[in-house]
Length: 131
Image (tube, rainbow, N blue to C red):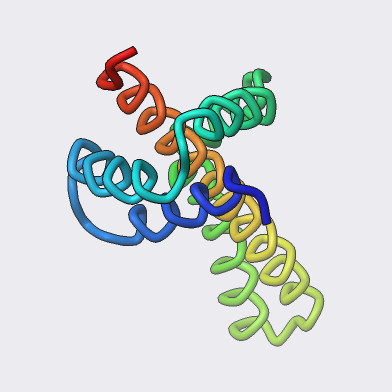
């Protein structure tokens, strides 16, 4: 596992906590500052910037993942509702497809948001480092 992947995992742990972005960055800054030497921080930042998607859809997912996943959760719920109430097993397909799509969007957005948090933290570390 590369240092960039380790930093993304640390950021995912921080995303699970309820706090402001500034507090998350502060906690990450302390952990990354101890864990990763400055030369590797620059390399990890370059790697993460190269991995970040530039297309419209992925940027939208990174910023609004829950908003985008909401219609898919609705489709899953309606499929479940109609499948039970009308006794139509075919409607359960909508439940499976909608739920899978919602989970995929949420997972993709979570990863992208964690990468953005690491990039913000590395930029802050770089700005505060005396050269």
